[in-house]
Image 1 (cartoon, one colour):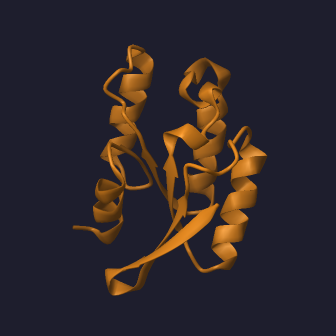
Image 2 (cartoon, rainbow, N blue to C red):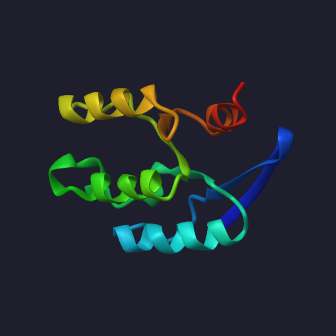
Length: 120
């Protein structure tokens, strides 16, 4: 399910809610991006539970394939989840590097995602 949020300065955000179908492939993400893009939105919040578990195993390449779509189509993404239990050094490094930019961010809460999109 997609829920839209309007925040200050006309910024529109699409939230892929926790009760949505699992995103299993880059094509699943492209379909979501197309639906959202037609609605004039280029900011997406996804809850980690909606991403297939292989997304967080960097060896599968799923994360790279999906996240590349956001750069290609100039959309921003915040992935909300609890990352404190991650033991993989490469995944920790990947999250840290992603969070240095503005396109892909891994955040702890919905409120932080909203703040990041609003620029505050």
